[in-house]
Length: 242
Ligand code: C5P
Image (tube, rainbow, N blue to C red; front, side, top):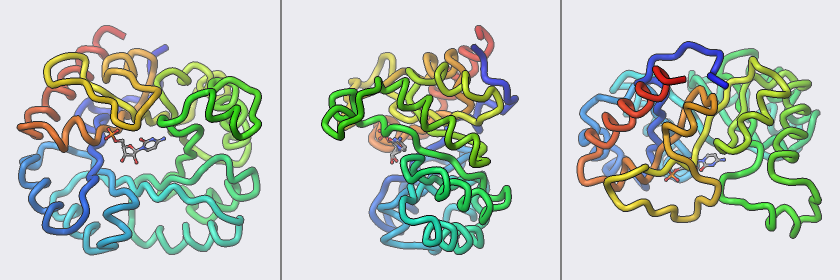
């Protein structure tokens, strides 16, 4: 199933800026040579540098994904979304496991900008991790159940692995689907690190991802700008085939 949203290939590859401080951020952005069109700031960098990191990224142009993965009582999440909305990011994440009311209040507080994305099941988890929490569903069934709650709450997009795209699209074809856990198909050694439900960029796009999120395969590459360009080419080829 192809993604229903028409997005340029360069914007479909979101680069995770998983670095500890402003100096490493500046160095990493330099090595990317202004090529990416969509950057993600996650917890590590945001906790360390806050809006200083946002400003540095914005100077480079491009869209911004604030990956704060909020999960708290509805009132706290709603107030945090309101505070984060000042940053003018395109996307902001919350955990769908926070429940209907938390999701509804997050969507209401954002009022469309940033777009709230619901993290379904982290790509570092497997079915056995769900079992350990007493969840008897498969990962795909859990994603489908959480996607239903999120869609009902007015959440416009989800984060899931490539393996659950069909389950999410069954709930709503209009949801924006963002897929992390991307690993190279060839070339530099494919190391998964803590990611468990992985796929290549081509697989994710062919299954219907709107965006992929790539961290270590770009950050740790000998030439990050080249690694990014190779991923964009892979996305373009997969889109043409889809
Ligand atoms: O290095 P790697 O490509 O595995 O980076 C994955 C990035 O995507 C990290 O920044 C991580 O926070 C993020 N992410 C994820 N799984 C999710 C949501 C976000 O791995 N479900």
